[in-house]
Image (cartoon, rainbow, N blue to C red):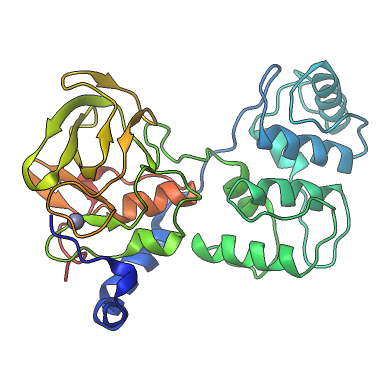
Length: 311
Ligand SMILES: [Zn+2]
């Protein structure tokens, strides 16, 4: 469990370049395109606002408020009728396919507002002004590069699908800390001596169950540690927490708060140590965490490599 705090190290970059490259490249190339989400009356959020901007782009009149109310249902139905689609007022794959226009650098439209809204789900912090300037170019370039998407800056159906597709990949999994806590580059770092990962956070960062399962408490060098015997058959161990918020033997769902990061046990600085074990053997968590960070399909734990993420 000993951790060498990564941000103090400059030599690490050179030592770990090979392993990082091996891990980072296949993530983008292997992940499947996420399915279009289905939006219907009563739902809310960034995907609804994205669809509303796209409806406006296609000439529908409605308020963009991120809430799928009666005005949105009516606008969707009208759009569907105009396209020869069944006018059920629900945005499913066929309707998304009609809404998702191709956009590129220099555009100034409600489709760009939709794009900026969707990109902001991933932390890009763009101004939603409908003007595709340098900041939007940078965000699109980064978003597509992280997923291995081709075609330059062009945002077509596939990129839209990645943007609005199921934001947490497999649905049964959640990132272990808030997405804004650490940059993506922290999720492909190898561990110091065996397959695992150390996420360098400050003390007190809210920690979430990666998937549903049954809790056990772990001590010793793990400090205030938590094990999750996942419903997927894998075992997940979190170490060095400052406190736990779930009792041993209790059930958790994916994304449930289980504790807070810290520096307990055999640890030389605040961080979250995470292990994934399948049939008792440690696997590399990096591809799983990167997929969760990217909102991509989450690889099954049994497909994770057991070598290549330690130095
Ligand atoms: Zn560790």
